[in-house]
Length: 123
Image (cartoon, rainbow, N blue to C red):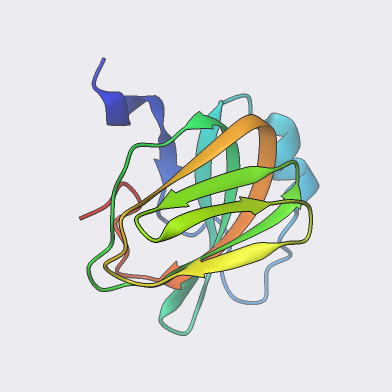
């Protein structure tokens, strides 16, 4: 299996404008260890949900900043400029062009905000 095939990434928004976004419903039906779902589009950005357990590969986004905000669990983000350990209700914005990789030692629920041109597995 290719390293990036273990990630389940849904880039198409699950919800449109004026639709109720129901996180508990999405979380309840998710059984994957590494899951990404774009929830909705906000102008030229995506509001995304991540359910992480394990390690993502090193990657970067040449044109997009990426915000990670933890709702549940703990997330370590290694970058070429240092390591960030995020606990519940903490976040960090990774600037475009920065090599990084998220690591979750346990099931972690994360909200991400990024431009709609993002390639979640990196450029």
